[in-house]
Length: 457
Image (cartoon, rainbow, N blue to C red):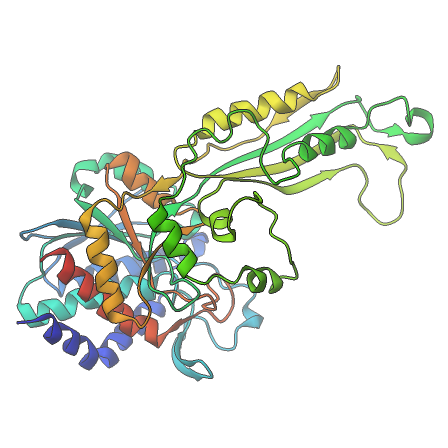
C-alpha cells in the first residue's frame, strides 16, 4: 500500500483526530502550579492510553516532578525518537480570553479555521500531529514503519527540572538514530522549515558596590565615584560602533555559514524593515556586516535585560547610591563555551572597577548552542518530504531562542535532533486566546506521514 493511502486516511479521519485533540486540550495540565498536579497526571494517563491504542508499549514513568510518558514500538530500519510535551502555560490573565481556555473549540476566523484553547499550538496540537500520522499509518499498513520511541514530557513549561536526571538515568533506553521534535514553527507562517541551529544562553546577574552606604550628592557629589556611572561605562564598552561584541575571545567557536545555507536564507525574502517596524524600530542593531537573518539565527549577542540602582520613585532623592545592578544575557552559537565567556566577562568587568569597589554575582549555569549536522541524509529526505506537502519549498532555518531538549539529546544521548513544527507567528502561544490553525494540524499530520515515509525508504 502506498503513502497516498495513508494521506487519504489522514484526510478522512480529520474530524475524529480533532475530537481527540479536543479531549487532550480539556485537561488543565499547567505544570508550574502545584494545584494542577492531578491534571498533569491525567494528561500523562490520557497519552499512555492513546499510544497503547496504537499498539505502542507505553507507560507513565515517575519523576521527582510530573511524570514522563515513554513508549516503544519495535521495527526495522532507522530508530526514531519523538519528543513532545503535554504540559501548558498558566492562563492568566483569564479576563483577556474570549472563551474558557480549557473549553476548546474550532472557530471560523478571517484567516481560516483555528482550534482555540490553551495548549492548542504549544505543544498538544503539535504533539498530536505526529501521533495522528502514526495512527493513520498503522490503520493502513497494520504496523508502524520503523522502530519508534515516544518521549513525552510534563515539565517543559516550568523549566524541566526532572528532565536531565531522567535522561541520564535512562540514557540507553532513550538513545536512537535521530530525535524528532515538534515544538517549532514555519518561517513567516508559510514556509515549512527544519530548524538546524539553536542559540545557547548565558546569563550574568550582578551587583556592583562602591561606597558603604548611600551618599548625599551635595556632600559627596564630584569626589565620590557613583556605582551607576561605573556600571553604565562597563555596559557601554561591551559593543563597538559596528555592533561587534568586544569581550576578548568572545567569537571563538563562532562558525561561518555555508554558501548553501546563506543562499536558502536569502531566498526566504525576509523583510527586516517590517519585522522591526512592527515593534516601532527601524535600524538593525547587530553586527553591521551581517544580514538581518544572520543576526537573529547564527550570530551571538550580548543584551542588557535589566539595570537598576539608586532612587527610582516619584520626584528626586539626590543620592549617590551604594550599589548598582544589572542582568546581562549572551545568546551563543556554534561551539562557543559558556564557561569561557563567563570568565572573560567577569575579567572585563572586574578590570573596570575602581579601587575599593566590589562585585557580587548571582548566576545560573549557561547552556551551549545546538547545531545539527545536515550532512546526515535524513535531513535532506525530510526537507524534500515537507516540500511535497506545502506550496513553498521547505528550508533549513535557525532559531534565535533556545530549546534545551535538543542540546540534552546531543550531550546525553549523542543524538542530533530534527526540529519540525507547524506553528504560525500569530498562534499567541503563552498568551490569551492561543490557537492552532486547522491547516497546521491537518497538513502537519500529513507532513509527518511524508517524513516517516521518506526516512524509512
